[in-house]
Image (cartoon, rainbow, N blue to C red; front, side, top):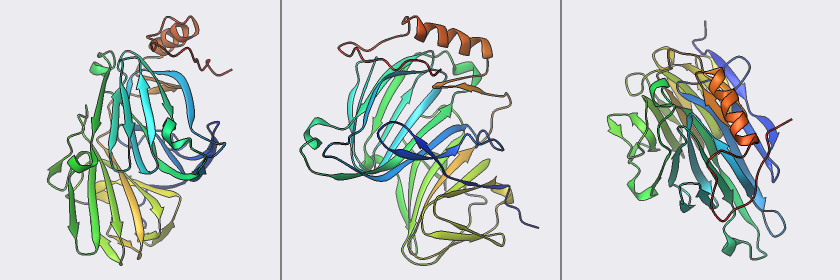
Length: 290
């Protein structure tokens, strides 16, 4: 019998400027460890008439993690942050009790040329006791992300802890996010190196695990201790997400996450009434969904 809990296929979602592949939440699996939302952006061509322009919108009860494989994004928020993210770096914004932000193609890239945008937009739910913490923003340069190799495989510990290493991203719970790239066939064993639930996302290439063949655009979900040996095909690129799940259920409405339905209602009202913390010098506003 297979030890694979679930295989989830990316579902296309239109975020206005381009389609993304949504991995979670999924009707049969709402979270993987503390990860509650994973969007795979691209790869897609932007420019000269098509750019990323995500207007001012709110978050609550979560941390956002942006990780680019190709292309660049400008992040600005109600904390006064102005941060450009480049491939390999991490933007980590903890919304806590509430923050707003925008994400846009940098002005100097709006030069009439086309370029590729490819990356991940991720939400990590906060522990219940930290849901009302003060918002924070951290940028971690790609040079500071732990990297190592094992035979033909190259690893990056984007966030959290695993393989005896710790990422400098200041996470708030037990989690991991690992990038794995192998130009040749490689056998990956995660048992003993990672803890909790795991989602193995195939960015490119394919894997064989527990008698199943899983290809590009899918995520294999299991518990680390139940995951058998994973055989990567040549030229395979993986993202591993996961960690220890929370004991309490999490509710999600639009861009808000909470262990309390009442807090979600309060956040909805604050955004509709425009009493949410807002950015200075940006009057854009994304309304609540109908």
